[in-house]
Image 1 (cartoon, helix red, strand yellow):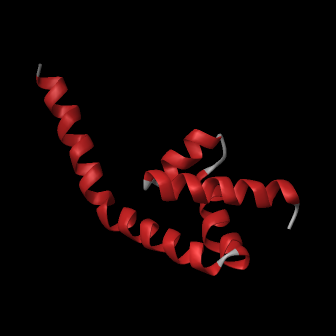
Image 2 (cartoon, rainbow, N blue to C red; image 1 turned 60 degrees about the horizontal axis):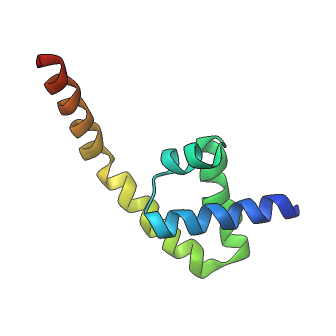
Length: 84
């Protein structure tokens, strides 16, 4: 793996761990695509550090389980603001 990819994978990993961030938010902060973040965290990270990969997997699964709630909340706010 090239060094710049290795560094990016580790930066993304520590950001997600510290902030419990979603793939979308992480991609926005680092200026890369969601696909890149997802690939780095699910495919490249396990080759580097299985323990960190396990922790990231838990966070990604939790985010996936909660995404319908975040989407519903965003819709509620949208229509609440439209009513004003």
